[in-house]
Image (cartoon, rainbow, N blue to C red):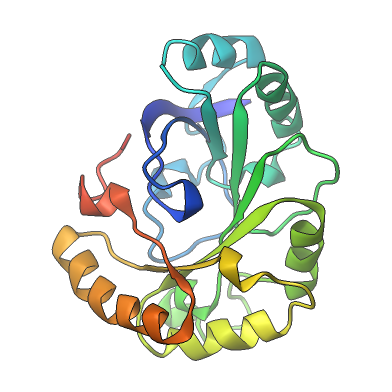
Length: 225
């Protein structure tokens, strides 16, 4: 597998925010979200080839039992299953960070962290184009949430995004609203704080969970954090 980067930090989002973890970022992603903060991992050749054994050796250097497989988009890589199995067999808690664009059965995963991509992920010039990237498929994501312990994380850029998120959730037959997290889209700390205030108020009013983004709040989106 081509690993774009492997680093040790705090999980930034969702139910495990703040937990020290090793991140394995695989190279390659078919999506092109305009606010993506890991564009350097889009190219499938952007990294170095590593075996599961080499990855485990790197993980073992850090004082944690938590591992996050991320991207790019890890579930479009056939070889990801071998990495997941090796890490799980070694006793680590495994989280998969995915956009939910592929379904795999029976992965030894503790948490499927799904970030559905809605219209705010499109480049403005592509929002009305038939060539725009595919958006989240509620049927496919429904299969993932039926098969795994999960969380759903939605990036919120403007208040207008909230109606689209609500409509998307209505299309899921079985979703636990306590596993839904809303998080502000931002690349700078000042922008993050500004959006966090009105989004936090919305979460208090509706009962959705607010997710921090520690990688932005603490480090301004610095690579490897």
